[in-house]
Amino acid sequence: MAWLGLLATGFALAAAFLNTVFGYCLGCEVYPLVRRAQGRLDTVA
Image (cartoon, rainbow, N blue to C red; front, side, top):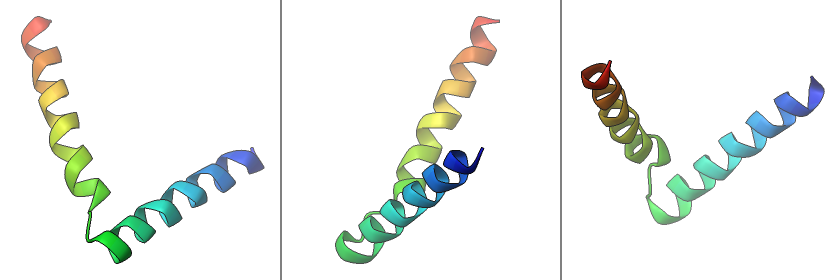
């Protein structure tokens, strides 16, 4: 399970790098996609 912590840390560092260097908020871009996908799943069920 130690690899899971390392993987999560790597993703967090990559997201922080994108935000700092390019001003690109990865969470701000992914959240609307997740919400839209959840809405489609709710209408299908």
